[in-house]
Image 1 (cartoon, rainbow, N blue to C red):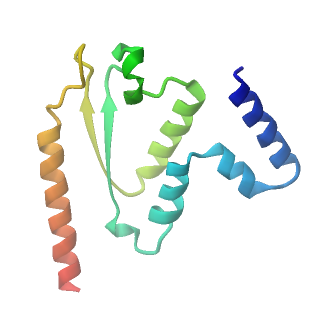
Image 2 (image 1 turned 135 degrees about the vertical axis):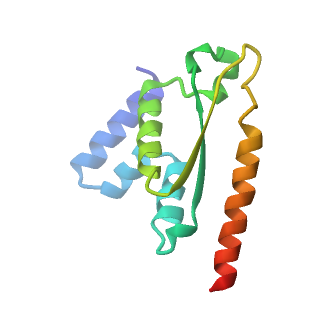
Length: 130
């Protein structure tokens, strides 16, 4: 176990033992996840939230020097998958790609761009009609 993991484990245990739920939540979730949960999907008008996710079909093929594309830590990966599952409550579009040996296949990007333009235009029309 790394020093970071040991410290995190100790802080989680202390926070849980002391009944400090907010501290535990902050330690268990990334800043990005906290922003998503509090600032986007917990608002009253979450129907305007658009979520776009990319899934890499062969993450094991991504080399270590490109690890920013793939979460390698099992604990972090599990938390990321749980967040993705929670996000499916909103308007979610998922795009699949694969590692080609040198980069991610960008074939999905045309559809992604079309979807973003279409979704934003729809939301603007809906809002303008209010």
